[in-house]
Image 1 (cartoon, rainbow, N blue to C red):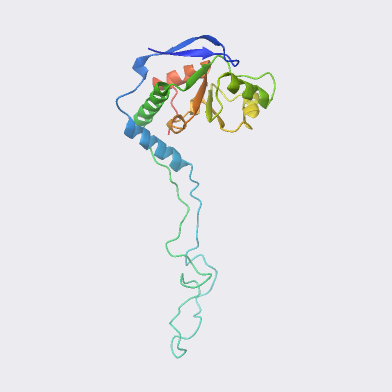
Image 2 (image 1 turned 180 degrees about the vertical axis):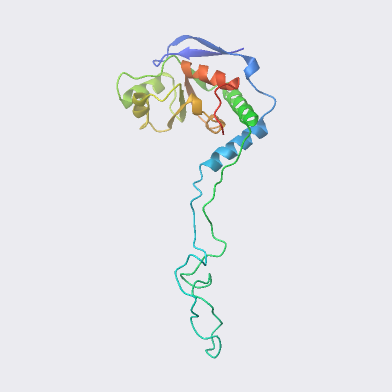
Length: 214
């Protein structure tokens, strides 16, 4: 059983939360993490790069000049890739970079990445992540109380608008819902702040419940 202290936003300890060792993965899953991160990064690519082929470049089938007698090389059409303003040979076309990851592989990757995060000792659980009003000051004071001043990943049960707007101008702070938490986020450096409610969501995902397709 892994125990994590629970703090309030002022940095005072208010309890503990336990995560069953049976949900953690320590001796396998490296390749699953690699595949999952590769698929995540590939999905970020728009795949919209496009060039014109010979059939798409404006022009007619008229020869630029007659075949013989000019001293020039033979030319059949102005859309040729060797001409300025012509087509592009083997240029990029719109495509999808999506990579499929099986559900079991995705679950294994998440469990292994979260286990590594826990064992690194840089996860802090907060009783409740909320602010009374939209003020960046509240987030800065929370980070100061928790002695965090670099890159921080904040995981919440759901995206609270007031909290998200308050944190968006703080350098190095990233907020994500526990439902959409990915091994890619878990592998990033820095500290990780998780709300107590988000821990419940993460535990369900560790058990294979409420998974998101990759």
